[in-house]
Image (cartoon, rainbow, N blue to C red; front, side):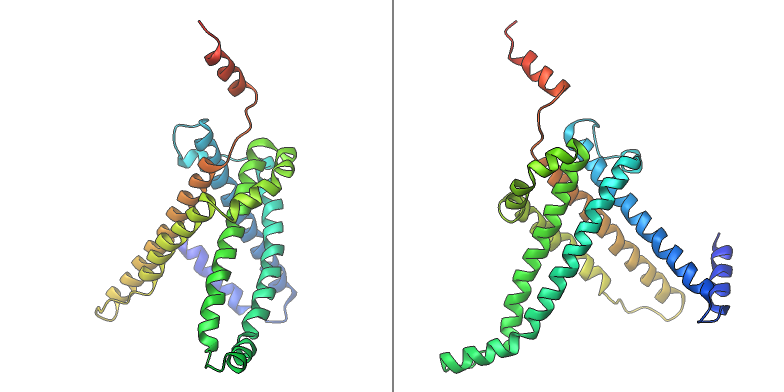
Length: 250
């Protein structure tokens, strides 16, 4: 498999830059990566939703890999909506960051005290991080409801889901997950141990990258499972029958 991958890379590099085949291969590669990302999203969120709902005893690999076309389409819808929202927010935050120097000058002139644009940029960065975490929590909550209860329930509870995502335990869970797992990933990724050049240098690089990716995967699974536990579920079907039976005196 590694030999075939190396041969494919060699053949790719030997193609001329203006070749239409290169553009076609790039398009196929991008679509394949997007399909894999959507499949991972559908599997992990669907598996976490099943585990939180009691359909499975725990979050297992078989539950993550077990997803159908319906979950894939619904995850694709949320992913496209999230990409559009992310592009809009990125443009807005880019405009805000460009205004930090003007805001600092305006504050310095009126306060008669020096105000650093770096300090203002740090404040903007904190608010930006919180908004990104809230957006990720909202989209994940929306996908959990969509996979569990369908389009009607997702539309009916969208406003309530948004309010839950910008305050309370949902936002706190996201901040904790990003701080812990994101911080550990950053530390592992930026740690440069002093080793001998050659094999050990490549070995420590491979181990650090693997550990960082593992931490990201664990953090994402922990976040989705926590959000699935916090997401209220409508009582329908067998769940409602079980609750009525439990309330009926023997």
